[in-house]
Length: 89
Image 1 (cartoon, one colour):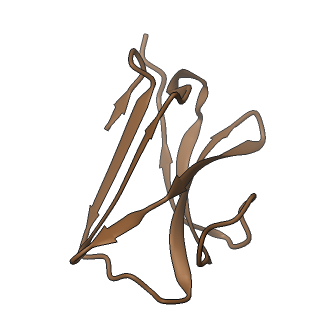
Image 2: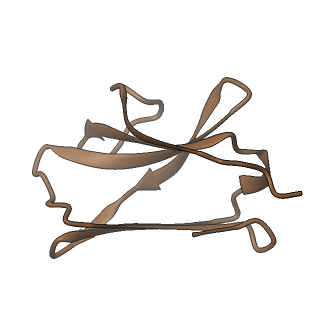
């Protein structure tokens, strides 16, 4: 869920199991840059992330990577998943 008007993002994934050594981290990509959106939190078999004060109208895609526990300042692994975003008109 992305809300351009309120500058919010909510990611919810089912069937995800936490790891003691790794985290799933979300990134917004635009203009060749990666912007850290945060590390997904786990509860039972679900992972979620809520970010506010973001600028989704600038994003080209939303990317997930597998990072060391606690996340990274910039992506350290290849993209695990990418969602290409189409700007609204």
